[in-house]
Length: 266
Length: 306
Image 1 (cartoon, rainbow over the protein chains, first blue to last red):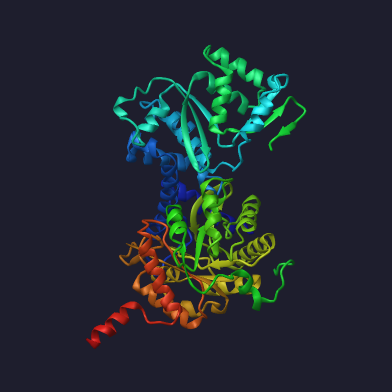
Image 2: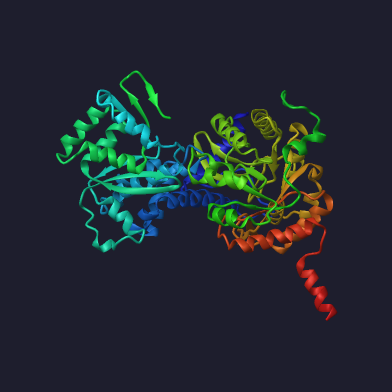
């Protein structure tokens, strides 16, 4: 590839994302019309399609700040961080951190966490399909008390926990027709678990302790470590109740004991 | 330039590039999943955008898997960036190979365009100058795709809004040469021909006849939006958000007269109407594929008799 060729797409690419750049040279129109007007079609297609992709992922954020503000904010994100993957389902991964540091959105302090929750739901929707471990198998393993402290719980790939300083689930739920937005006190802390059961994504508000417990074992902690951390954060944490909840939600896909990597997945 | 892994017997290329039935098909959108599964409409095939299904699991794969049990499938890529100055994204090619292994589509197609530069992906189909250097690069990339996917692909003629001073050959010459060198088939987008020919002051019927029509493996039909360029001339946008225009139906009839009946897709990606509206457009394409006059003409003939 020649240097001249290389510069063709470089110049085109630069001008696509930066409206301050002039229309790239070397363009031709059959009727002698200004190529800038035609180049603007590409510029518009790129920005609008990428802003649309973000709007699809973050509908509640858009509703919270209004569509014009959301799209203007998304436009800045697109220009600064165009996607590096062709798979746009996950383009929003860096958006919550961007929102957190976007000065014009500072008056809506919970916006970044609502974006985190929406991205978690997107990730959960597309997470790998893994069958939960059958309840009898889990019950059998939990009945061997000697193994219990060293057990590592493997959660379904869709499971994630958000410990927010804000009532992030209540804010989200109010936009799904569950309760009134005006009745939500946004500054109350909430821990939320997102998971997919079958084809449906759920968000569930958790007590502080079980939120920590799940976060711990997602990170690979042994049961005893996860339990200690949960109890330290929440004196009301009860291991038996927590394990019952995990069974109820069908979160557990494997139980491994200690570091022998012995797997129980059948 | 010929691939070392593929036979150069181009007469069989279209067969391997597409085994879709010579019927009308529809783009499959998530909003249609339940309706399609519960009503099993008489649609010749469905087409999906490959990139939308490059996710690990969940409802998209669940529904596509079930729908695939009942319908032929066309896998249409929008992000491979075959015209890019940079190397093809090997991980993206791997993901395509995985989807093809999973769903066994009757056809895989991509665009004569670029959509990425370096690490940035633009999610749009960007235009190319038609030069010897571009031709070598596009052919090398098509060869690489066909070798990795172990099948021939269909290459789609583009809708463009600008041309390049550097171009040394016409678009039809360029496409014909890519098809000849790589053995790929042609995805004949009739709407793109109409859009590009209006946008660049060309004769769409002459353009159509200059393509290698014996290598058409699929036809695309779509709607466009109309803007105006700097001189006040119409500038058509390939927006996929409207019914197929009468001028495009006429060009489709022209194309069918020059090819054997071939799988024809109604592309509607934006402003989706009710499913029945899409079915009606597909029915019109099926009547034309079967060599029947358009419904409107039948009505006119009936009215003339009464």
